[in-house]
Image (cartoon, rainbow, N blue to C red; front, top):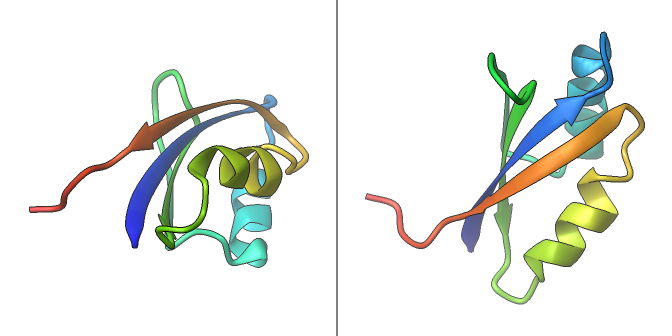
Length: 78
């Protein structure tokens, strides 16, 4: 398993709605609201056989209310 973090910029006023949709889809282990350039930080665990690019574009970016994403790949947890 590998951890992937996705920062999400939402349409104005829709951050909680987007967070709820991600939670309902059961694709993330953790969802945080954040301050700054992005509204949400989502932590997902992917099987080694799953392509992170396909996962983000097909499972996350299709959720209504998302304007932009930034994916952070991880290598090792300490």
